[in-house]
Image (cartoon, rainbow, N blue to C red; front, top):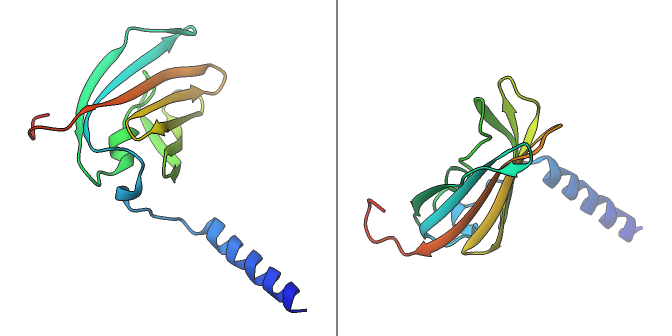
Length: 142
C-alpha cells in the first residue's frame, strides 16, 4: 500500500514538473564567456552558400537565447516559440511570415564549440551555424 502511494506521489510530481516552465539561470548554460567566431551559412538547393562570419563577445552569465540563438533562416520575419533549453543545447520552433513551419537548434559538444541549424518543413536545412570560442574578450568593443 505504501509503495503504491509513493508511486502515485512521484507520478503527480513528475506531471507537475512536465507542465511547469523551468527558468534556468543563464550562468548554468554550458558555454564559456569570451570572444566567439560564428560562421553562418544559408543553404540554397541543398548547397551551402558563402559563409558569413560574425564576431561577438559573450559576457559571463549572458542570456543563451539572445547570445547563441539570434540567427534565423535567410528569408522572412520570424518569431521563436516553444523554446526548450538544456545545459548544452537550445531548441525552438520558428513561425515565419510567408514560409512553412521551421525548427532550429544549437548543440554544444563542449564549452568552446557548437553547431546548429534551421530546418524548414518540406525543404530541409536552410541555415547552418557553427561557433568557436576564439579568445578572452579584451575590451567592450570586442
